[in-house]
Length: 268
Image (cartoon, rainbow, N blue to C red; front, side, top):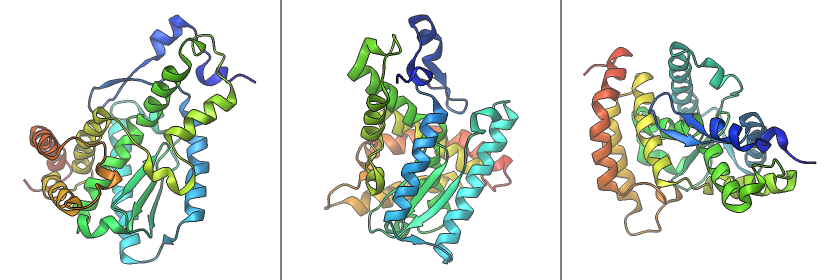
């Protein structure tokens, strides 16, 4: 069986379908895969991960993860509704879970499946810091970075086969598992520098839209950098821009983020 409903498009259709524009940042990216298929597989992997992890629920920290995530989700939904792109989020089935782990990490799979590790909470310190992390991770999903990574991997491995629609289920599944390693290893997903920079920018805007102070992003990233000094760099930072570039970019994007924050009722 060939997965023509995912990659079975011809050269003309490819040129039309290839370019997807992020409505928040304006960045264009190559996204060839079927988002509904990606979300289905992501939901399965998320369930597997939760089954292999200790999920924390009912605690103040767990409730904070759900609360911050829900506010960012609602802010994103309002924004997409205002610009007439609610359909982009129609298949999202959001979940926010706190997992017991010493890793300084968090992630969001396509479709809004979010996990925050307890190890990062001492670095986030408060809801604003947590909003920096969760806004960043949710942005990866909203921006279609998983689709982009899968598309890049498919083209690199199979090239012209994509144009002919001859990619098999096993090939598709293999690439998905490369991009989203199975089960608890899903946290090892690596994005490119451009995608990480976009998630920084988009996450800054989303936290502002949700009523969290985006100025708290700089102290958080400074704490995150300090936490990794003298030790193996956390996966959360492994492909991110260097600290100086990140802080420079945040300062560049702060004025717009503060506009969103002010519109959400924040005090400047």
